[in-house]
Amino acid sequence: MKTLISGGTVITAIDTVPADVLIDGEIVIAIGEPGSHEWAEEADKIIDATGKYVVPGGIDVHTHMELPFGGTVASDTFESGTRAAAWGGTTTIVDFAVQVKGESLIGGFDAWMAKAEGNCAIDFGFHMIAGDINEQSLADMDVLIERGCTSFKLFMAYPGVFYSDDGEILRAMQKAAETGSLIMMHAENGMAIDVLREQALERGETGPVSHGLTRPPLTESEATHRAIVLAEIAGAPLYVVHMSAKEALAEIIEARDRGLPVFAETCPQYLFLSHEEHVDVPGFEGAKYVASTPLRKRAEGHQDALWMGLATNDLQVVSTDHCPFCIGEHPLLGIQKKLGLSDFTAIPNGIPGVEDRYQLIYHGGVVEGRIDLNRWIDLCATSPAKLFGMYPKKGTIAVGSDADIVVFDPDVEWTMSVTQHHMDVDYSAYEGKDVRGRVETVLLRGKVIVHDRQYLGKKSDGEYLPRELMSVRH
Ligand code: DUC
Ligand code: ZN
Ligand code: ZN
Image (cartoon, rainbow, N blue to C red):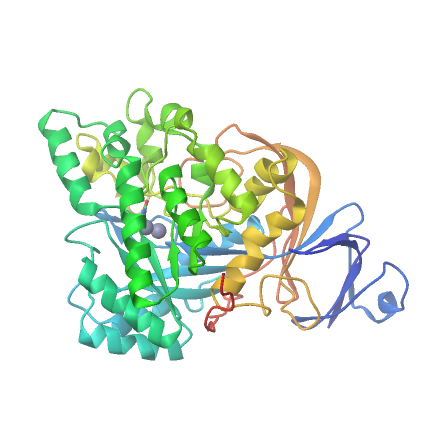
């Protein structure tokens, strides 16, 4: 089965060229000058992309589908969450499998595989959250690397839940250095945050606004600094997740300037939303935006610093940290955010966004003039693929790559809303936001799964994607 995408402008992390793309089965087999060939005659299907961008499927390396967390479970299942991702032009996710304290790393991986396999609309891989670093779990890292899980997330936050101390972190980093795998760090000083939370509650400060106020930028930058130092001692690369504070970014910049293999991501919520506008608002509305790391104050300049970091490659990736919890009642899961109605420490942490990312970064980045088209692709597809061992199978449009392709209309103007999205959550973090640019057609390994505002795929289209080791050094 051959498919021709004709008349569009192909955009990769490097090139912006008018070109036709020929697909055979699941793979791109040729890219050529528009109309200068006989491809239309051999094609079984032709997709007209005239006036459109033809871009690689997005890669979101930070999602939490059906994550048990904060006394409930993230409301998107692998089925609903990956379908929503497809609507937004994302064709691969890397989700976080969880090792619960006292249980095995491999058991956690198998449990997440059982939830995902056969239920995903797009391709999926896993990082492993190592909640318990000990001799057995360090040995199990070898087994998981063999199975294509080549990155491991540790937490400097959430004492008593996922938290690892500095000694445990160093051991895991030494193992990563030995194996060529990658440690991803949730960098917040959880011990200090717990003190600030307790003190806020003692003062009777129970509302959502206190969530962010008890996780000040210094708790993020101190942990980021410490993670960098530990990685340097171990001789391991480091990837810091969901960066939100400019002080933490400064630590990344300093480390990279010294030549260390230190990388970091941010997420749309930290680029577009703020403490003042979304969290420090009347009533319980701010709970929609309770996440860790927290939204930062716009007046302090974090958003601008993060955009600048994306433009200059001090930050390499935009992921979502998609972790949805309903503000009202979920039909199956009951109340979620409202678990923390009278105590902000009980609000499940997380913001939805897996469907929003690619389009939002186009709008805020390209349309609003902060980054160019190629950087948009690099941040949302190519760099994530290289850092997490998926390139060049994923993350670009090239001969021999998987035909994960999005036809993107750069001119459509529309308004983001819960009524428009497909995520299983009862609010949009971007309700009412006017944006330009929308996903029109999505191909997953050559199969059209979204076209013309219709979902044409099925829940088992997505396959497990075993990943190689990272392929970038700086
Ligand atoms: N932060 C969140 O906001 N949700 C899930 C886990 C995390 O680290
Ligand atoms: Zn985290
Ligand atoms: Zn996360």
